[in-house]
Length: 454
Image (cartoon, rainbow, N blue to C red; front, side, top):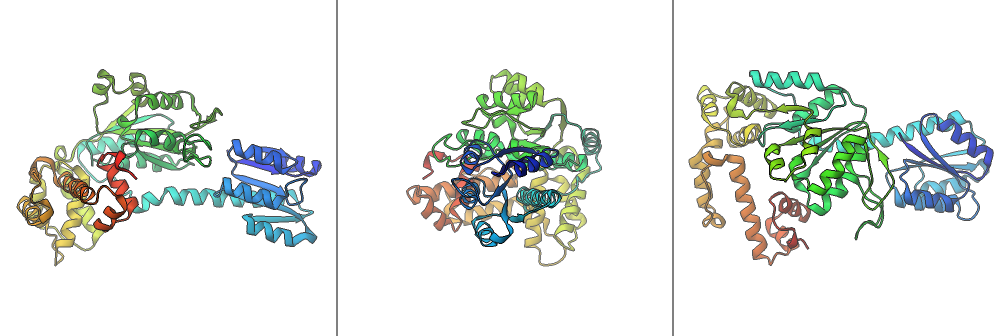
């Protein structure tokens, strides 16, 4: 439920606004800016409604402070009709709308609804950015194993039950999670968290959010992914990488639907459905004391296992056709279909997609050069011809898969570049011709010691 702060010194107007808005929103109302500032220093508000003329700190200064604290939240200012100049100043300070006095409550309600709808769409655009960058397509396959996965998705979609998706890396666990979200027609967002990408000190804030001053660098309150997911789905990829102490807090979220931000003591409620995924054996981790047993049973209410591509050979060519059609009017010869079927695919569907994309780049005609994209001899030859890789002891592509092999090469090159540049990230990024933020992401991805971070 959206939260609205009302600041109006005229009691009748203040109470009338609060009465009509309280039917659909959580509201708090005060008669001065000082009390309002204290409130939004401790609580998160989606919308501020304020009169411009207030005792003490005026409405324009209040708008500035509110927008500094919550730049993504909206503001409506109320002003006397003869004081339009102040309204313009308030708009410059960050207000989204203004209403001249006298006004109808119906007019106010419409503006509130429109602003919150725009705000919601803005949040969706931010979190659907990943969907645009990484296309969530359909689940392709006719093998009995994939048909079973599709049936399980139909059964669980729309039901508020924790789901655990297991399978090797690259099998499509996030795609299955998103299919549950899409078929369930959730009102909230699909919010993915790739747990393995965050260090111990970051994952807690990423999940639960934090209060201003909770730790060094926390200069403002920040919502976590659990809070943002609201009535949607929180997808926790690689759940096995979450530290044990944070697993306790996550268990509370699942059981009680409540949590607190880091550095705070206010209880926050969530209706988010939680879907987890892992490529690790959580049962073995429980036996070793690396994963909480109680959490394991809470997330494993509805398990979905995605088999590796090598166990569903029937789907390989279907997937190859699907990916090739996305890239253009490419054709795959019978010889290359057999080549695809004969390969072990340790990187699963993700590796197959990468091979098809690489084949499209290498192909000079409409016939996809799968042989060039997948050939072990070509890969090994490319490695040996690169000066920086001459001393790398690389395994065969058939042993670990093309995707894993290329990742090993990339990690070694980044480490070598860091050493050659005295572990200075700025100069290393320039040397590698990538952004510094990209370098930091790759350091996290490949587990390069974050003590090297500047």
